[in-house]
Image (cartoon, rainbow, N blue to C red):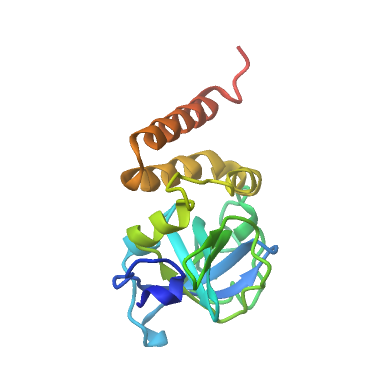
Length: 211
């Protein structure tokens, strides 16, 4: 996949087409169906669409960047009797046409936009992702490009929206994402990210406890 598709100054040759957008529950919370043999695009392995994986949805002027925040296996044979648990917004409600056959679905939260000129903006994207849009994995060089500002420092402007919209999985999601960002950082940025990860760990462990 050429660099221009993802709007970053790196070659994302190993980017893989893994899913297709089928629905949304908000402007930043989308549902995608994992590709199957019937799609004729190659079937991705489970590791290709794991929790916290960065993904891209290319457009004419770059790509919208997101993260896999949840997943669900849909099996109509058992849906009526299966236990229901609180869902994150991206998988909060499935239409009947989405839930009518066996499939694997992923929830995607949008993080920002990587433009074709190499610049990145970490804010709610303006454009709506159309149904049928393919979803690609985002490889490490592209992840690094999306997270570094013009001065080379790490930027995480999307974190407040992420924590506010990822529901009960927000903290483990954020910690998983931080683990993918630290590799290409300076020592000072790694220390900052380590402090954030430790704070999130504390919140996950003690945040809801009454002492």
